[in-house]
Length: 167
Image (cartoon, rainbow, N blue to C red; front, side, top):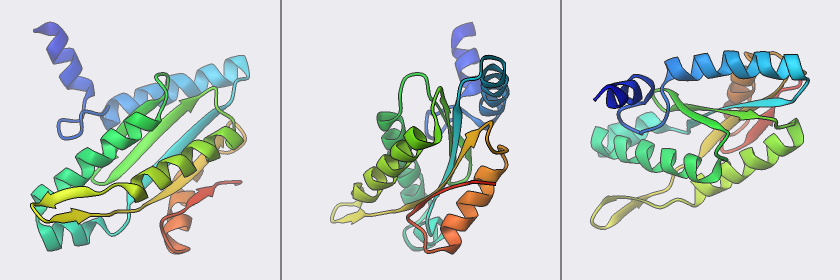
C-alpha cells in the first residue's frame, strides 16, 4: 500500500506519466549532475497543436484519449533513463540525460513524426490525427526556460515542428 501511495504521488493520473512535481525534482537533480560531471542534458517541451478544438469538437473524453495515446507514444520512443512527464493540460516535458543537442534533435523529430502518424480512435468510425510542436534546449549551453520560448517559436512559425533554442 505504501509503495502504491508513493507511485501515486509522482504519477499523472490520466496518462500514467510522471507528474509536474516529480519532473521539477528530477530536472533539478539532472541539471546539477550535468554541471558537476560535465555531461550534456537536453530538455524537450511539447504540446498538442489545436488541442482545444479537439475538446470543443469531440468532447473531453476524446481529448483524454488523445493525451493518453500521445503519452504512450512519447514513452515508447524514449529511453529508460529519460524522464517523461505531463507538465499540465496538453503540455509534456522530457528530460534527456547524457544527450547533446544533435541527439536531442533526432529524438524530438522522431517524436514529432511518430505523433503525426498516430491514428487515435475516437468513435467507431472516427480516427483523429494530431500534431505537436516541440521546443528543445541543450543544457548547460542555454537556460532551461529557453525551451519554453522555443516551443512558442515552433507554434508561431506554423506548428508541427521542432525548434532548438540557441539563446
